[in-house]
Image (cartoon, rainbow, N blue to C red; front, side, top):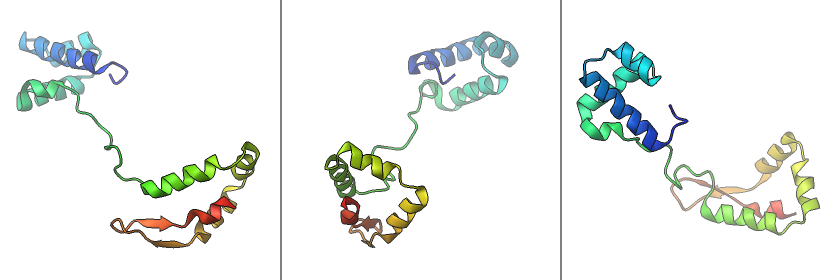
Length: 128
């Protein structure tokens, strides 16, 4: 069902509700629409509880900027470091082993960030 567009999913849900109103069984609706019986039941149950707004998709995922691993300043610093390198220097960085990179990241000095307990890394060592 997720391969369909938002509008197509909403239309399919409308179809499910319409068929059930006409007296179709859950099994018949499921066969007609290509959904599982459980999916049909869940759509009908949500519709009964929430009305027409239950047929619309609820946007999922996290909001932009939520749960970021790095602060905006840290991201800008990393971008600057990458842009300052030539392609062959970046290749040297990319071919380093994960163990080497883990040791290098651990060696960075960490200090508390002014933003609610996040950690701020000193990225100046990455530019070497």
